[in-house]
Length: 245
Image (cartoon, rainbow, N blue to C red; front, side, top):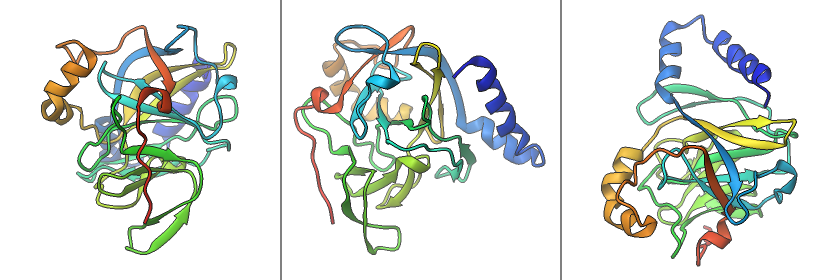
């Protein structure tokens, strides 16, 4: 997205909530600005282009820290409707929809909002399911839907077309979304911020030793700068666990 368009988008979002200073404060609390980091191919180091993404394929990159995994998905359809969401603490925020030339590309933290299950090279219990699956929704009824993020650890299910909102399971809040800046001239992406409830501090504490071994560095909370490598999730992990109700 060009800077002028990005600024216009942010301005319209703020304009929509100026009537409520309290709501504006909550927006600021759940919007976390980090460094502008380019998404590049993990193997070639070349910028990731929207036209190179396969629809329905989950990709993985790390942001805003070197050990915090994220999903990037081209949903194959324009996602232009804004979603009003709230964190487990009741903080309200608005998700702005998809990015890219067709507004079909979305990105979310790949850390489950329940018990922080996340992709690892050995196994990933949280995955994007492009084809229809069955799950128990928030009313404890069996539902079938395609295009969901499904965590098989405790059966939390999220809707990436509506800001990662919870469709079912014990997750207390949506997945934190990753703000993507799209450069239409170059057809490339930059990660710039997170929106929603973050869980990074607890994630670092709970998984510290394993993350140090996995990433080969002690500073697992080091902020990403410059660029971050991206690859297909199925190339990152040896085992994508699939489940359904």
